[in-house]
Length: 129
Image 1: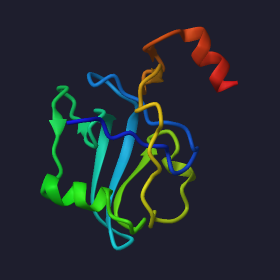
Image 2: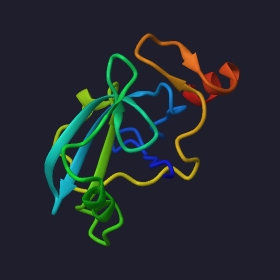
Image 3: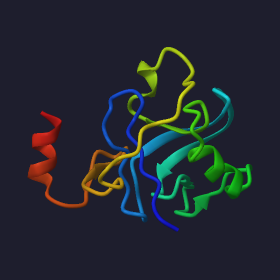
């Protein structure tokens, strides 16, 4: 299975993960513009999150149904991703899915403990400024 990669609906920056750790994220599963399920944790690169032990947390919704929602022509279907650090800026519930990240969510990222993980820390600092 390939990676699902998303752009944060709030800050328009990628939600990043190295498939072992990831940025803290709120994921919302939409159907017809309504939230039907949520997940919170470190993004795992595959449309899910890690729990505190590093295991991927599965959606209650069947994966085939999630894929059908993700590839629907209706933008009100699919996954919405919002960085944990951005969620306090969100004023309304999301009603359209997140855009896909052309870089597949790969690259340096920041965890809640403010450590950088991934490629080059200097490159990441330049991105933040």
